[in-house]
Image (cartoon, rainbow, N blue to C red; front, side, top):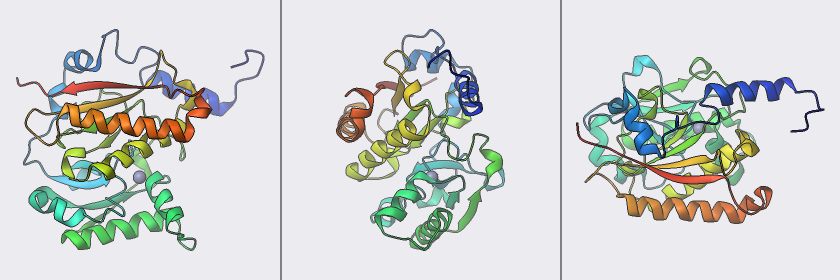
Length: 275
Ligand SMILES: [Zn+2]
């Protein structure tokens, strides 16, 4: 930034979120995410019991559900918007699903779905709500409603995420460990389709690089694509790495030019350790 230019309110606000969200020393001096993770006092809380109740929500880091639902998020694109295999996929796990949801503050995935399907007469909120209702009907579970603004403090169009959690197991809920940096959640282990999941990863990173800290990310302070695994559950580290690296390659082809050909994204890992 040019030091002679007066700092805009928006920039000052973003700087505040950057500092609040971990600043330049996101991992608190630890060399990698695994060591950082296990150093957090509440780290075990982020891996929930396999029988814990879940709601189907959006990967959006600002969606943390509503307390009265008594359920933790499964993060996908909206409530699995446009995911045609959503019924067969969720059947074995349906007993833990309490319902679907949608959220406010411009769902990025609903925006994309609206554009791709030419839904010019509907608002983004309508698309998000309608699709969550369709998913609910397909699964035979209730549509729980909307995650309102009170769970989302940042400005409407701003994503404060410093990471994307690509969860191979499907039982990782980052917001249950409050010291973990804000991050989008893709509950990869909850779906079978690798192509769909890879596309979600690409969209998640695109949203943050375009509507988040964007150029504030550098090779020294990168956006982290954190691959989370739980031994013996869902997909393993190697498979998840292939998917995420392909998503990064695809996104580099798409918007790499805006970042001198190299996205400020780094792949790192968290693995569940037994206590
Ligand atoms: Zn969303």
